[in-house]
Amino acid sequence: MKVRYGKRLLAVVLAGTLTASLAACNKKVESGAEKADTAVAFDQIKLGEHTDLKANLKFLTHKTDIVDTTFQEYISEFQKMYPNISIEYEGITNYANDITTRLTTGDWGDICMIPVTVDKNELKNYFITFGNLDELSKEYTMLFNYSYDNKVYGLPSMGNTQGIVYNKRIFEEAGVKETPKTPDEFLDALSKIKDNTDAIPLYTNFAAGWTMTAWDAYIDACATGQADFAHEGRVKGKNPFADRGDQTGPYAVYNLLYEAVSRGLTEEDPTTTDWEGSKARLNRGEIACMALGSWSIAQMKDAAEHGEDVAYMPFPITVNGKQYTVVSPDYNYGINCNSSADNQLAAMLYVKWLIDKSGFEVSQGGVPIKVNAQLPDFLKAFDGVGLLYDLPTPAGEETLGNDVNNESELGVNVSGALAKAVVEAAINGQPEMKELAAEWDEKWTAAQEKYGITH
Image (cartoon, rainbow, N blue to C red; front, side, top):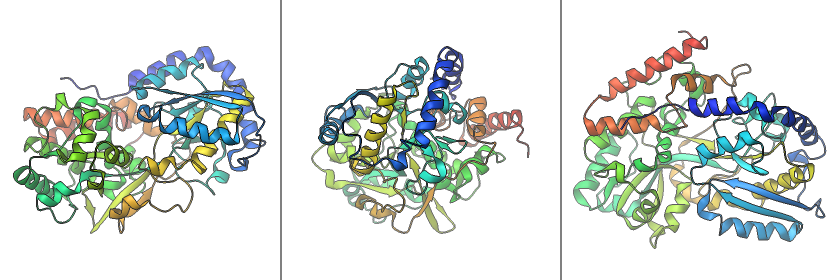
């Protein structure tokens, strides 16, 4: 199989089809931004007001598994307060790709989960603002991903911690008494599982594709202990994918996957993995662990009858004696700048209700975005782990990360192509991990140089 690394095609689609709707959207953006800063700024909205508002909302979501269940319950509860606001959810299976195309039409609905393919300086072309970053930051965290020029265009549906979802019964039966804290310890644990149980030690979920992006989420703060590594160390740093020699950094993350596959500690044929089926298999103990964000916990617990065996551990990298995890935003809510004024206000009210009242984040294995919120009980294993939050990108460099990523065509945090390439190389026995890393660094360096980053 030939892996395509980048998101350049998606960027071209956005750029090439934006012009037709840009003029109309700009007018709406200006009025929407003004309204968001005054009458309906998110931090000024009080639930229980505007109860006579009438609107019909369409909501595009990646959460296809709960469109007909949990989301319908939310609608019923919300309508007890706002009986004249109707909400229709549309679940999209191939969300990351399809939503990018849908956005360019301008006529996609009223609320969506913003895709990573939208650059910060283009946010105003698609979405209204929720208000001023400085003001909203007093109440909510993780707002930097979809903020630009001190305006917030996206609000996180929840925060994700990054780690490994696993079956604790299988780890115990294999003789693994403590959760691994380094790549070597993790590989040793997988070997014990292979030798002492019938479970697949590490399930890659390779065939699903999007699941492989989970590995990209570990390569920055989790692997370095540096909250600003994503921008200062990876986007701007020299050869960020090179082996540090101490089992830390991006190389250590991908090398862990490489070694697991090459040692036969994963499923026999990655091309035949089954994402939906894997949830119940982990629940039952047929799979020992998977690399996924904390959002996966609830899905694994609910997939079969042994939810009590499902647990979550920090990613096995230790930096100077301490483990770290990133608390990062999941998909962000965005409101269409082309929607009517009433629909925009109704959408604001529903997003407010989802964030403040629904309990969505905990039910889906996430962390609340409210300032000073406590970690939920299912993350007790993270006591003592350093919690690192995203930092704002320096002014003038807001699009630099996407620019370098696009130019390099590596697709970090977009396509999962690096992890896919690792799996393929490990199966084939070539290239070696250091050769892969050298190839990535060469592409990355060339992209950095194009945008004026020199070392």
